[in-house]
Length: 318
Ligand SMILES: [Zn+2]
Image (cartoon, rainbow, N blue to C red):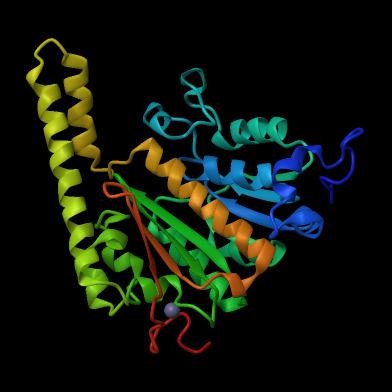
């Protein structure tokens, strides 16, 4: 395994000069990061800031799983890619960017979609797995595989102005299934992939330790996002000269994908990266909260201790 402590020309620690003084890092922490490995599922809106944060801090080995190709609508948030690269492999472009940015990290790419077949091997090959995806199916698969093997992972999700980061340490914290109330994702396949995580009524139903006022705030925020989106589309429709935009707006409505700001993706992806670094450096003792809920309209982050479901179908016996 390559290390950031070799092949650094005449100044081996120069790259990390601005973080070595942090009491949580220092020389021993930097060596720990160099010897650490993470696997990131997704190199999109969350994955780009997340991967950059991990590589920049000096994580020694990073695997990336990404099977998509660049689409125009990715570019409001996925800063690894440019308009001249539409249709190209995201994985190859992300690896090219990251190898330039941090050549001392060992980069491993996987261009197949994350699957139950490969999940187990991946989980055992890395210290930590990070889900930077936009669908529940992948999260569910990862959760199941991680719980079976007792390995931690960190999930994140975004919608509009808001986002969350969920830390799962099987047997010690609530798992993703506890978070979802033990629901089978196939049973809710017709639902929007991210709305479940953000839906205040479901949070209440699962007896999560959070304030009701916060629930209302999240719900209001979600409603506001919908209204904002409707106003935006209406404004575009009003302009008779913008036929192209009109068609685009109709397409956006037809696809029914959740709206998201690039700034939200960058913020939540970075938050996920910071949590990952904390785990790699300090371990479980420094992870008191399981769930971070970010409200972009109030700039508020709520820390939530999730309750484990005693009858959870995934982690109930751990
Ligand atoms: Zn569970």
